[in-house]
Length: 388
Length: 249
Image (cartoon, rainbow over all chains, first blue to last red; front, side, top):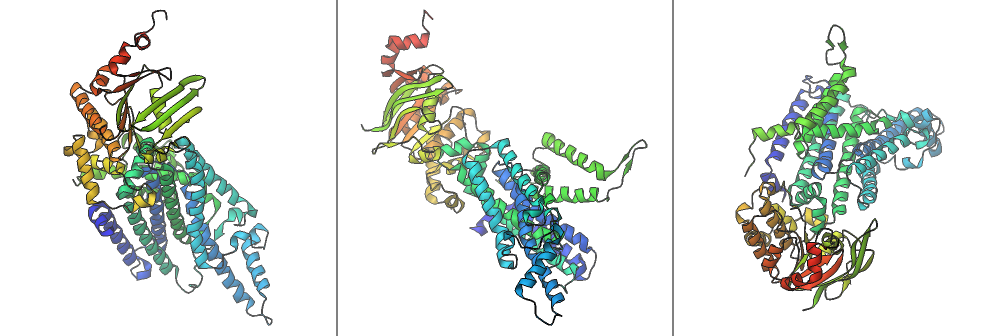
């Protein structure tokens, strides 16, 4: 099935080839390989970008193919990040605590160890007790499971309630915004158990690999992100290729017709919503160890709106469009806001891109929507003729 | 002839407007039936009620040999019982090919996972060819549905209903906007379909109904006004009243 699917989908093969080339160039040019052409911080940026591409592909499936304009997918991304971040922070703190306590004559009791770790982690919010959500933080495998299970369950429950009540269109978008806003506001509280607005930090330090340089770690995460993007891309391309794709696009174009053909539309929406949420969670779990820090601001509503902007600019309804949009806009964004872009001196006014980037982004979003509804990906229609 | 669909004593009020008022209709299998009536007579609401889009305030809708109630079932469940519905405006999936449109409608398991792992079968392909020739779109199978003419879209939608292999077809104004030639072909398709199943056609156009040559039900203000052959109902003075307008109104 998969082989036949790859044969008939040229764009998937081209994408995988391009991704492999890009990955190889970065890997061989990185500091870890000795070439040193690409700085470690750039490797991290590129690795993070790949994760953003992955969530953009998921967004394209849920919005571009299924027609559900979710403005809350970054909530799932953030949950994935928090889930892995809890283990990273716990295990690293445990290592530090154990080494500082190792000099004592009387070995510390487990309670003392736990208290010491707790006060290290929760000191910033004036607590030292482990909240219930940290129950499995000492187990990497369980926290990895949470990366998948928690976003999946949240999407399943939220989607079931929303789709069953047949909430569609802008009302559904508002609901998803409310979901991510509520989650973010909750996490901002100090007693949320996840360190309030401090978030989780030091995530770039991987427990057990203290001796490994950041150059190597960042390359490993870059490669892992590239693999995840490739696998996610294949998965979604397969989902939207066959009959499932027909039904999903049918729901986008005419939900009632699909219903009267005998398909339970709610079930399909729930499937797509949940699957994309799980992939978003995985993307987040790969992103935040590269970013080093996660805090509730990451899942503020604006993040998910950016996600929709990336997909719109890249081109809805084509997976490579989402990748192009996410990569281009997020890289440009860090270039403009990071002071990379030179200011424009108009004599009477000086355009500083750190302030004006959002205006530029907003204008390009409006421009694309009005004049190029197919987005950047639409350009490929002119280059490549459709296979008959 | 056993009754396939039995609608009895059904009423539905929208914001004080009685769209359907104590409506009773029986459809047998096989049968071709035309439902006519002026605007607002409740023709489309009748279809909405049978297909589960609208819940009636009172009355019964019974289906099949075991007289199951269709009330409370979802649209998808009703569709899977064997009721296909064609909308007034042609609604096909414009961005997909004619073949994909038909493939989606083919009678197959409808669950997300069954569909995800669905593999094309020779049987399915043959059935698509068969339906395509029945609706005269054999040459158009690889075309995008959005490129089809208005009439072709209507036939494609009828073809999608046939692909579902329903026992009852509800067809809402199939001839609207068609040329005389297209109407003739539509009549043929519907009459052929009605040889093995029940087909209910809602139509404004008397000439089209005459060509269908079947039992006619006249609706007025959500109620059955007359039933019988077209000649019989058009001779009915109350029907003439409704259609030509009352002189004292």
